[in-house]
Image (tube, rainbow, N blue to C red; front, side):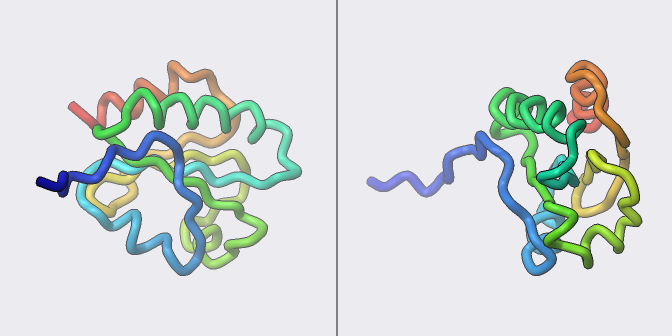
Length: 115
């Protein structure tokens, strides 16, 4: 008998202007990291997002948007500073964190959405 349940996502998926809406609009909580390769603070936040994706696999989904390559999504959410972490619930933006912050701050926002 085959297992029809997909394995939980354990790392952020790359989102782009074409795939963003379909991924974010799914039911549940999704955390999206808006970043760019040249951004120093983004290199601090990226491993935190990776850890949270592993720790909350099956409870929340995680994605990353390279703002340089995806101007449509970035402009839609008025992303002017990076890193910016946006929290979505059932397809709607519900919280945001701008700048490099400790894991505890991001995790607290995530836990509030999951409870």
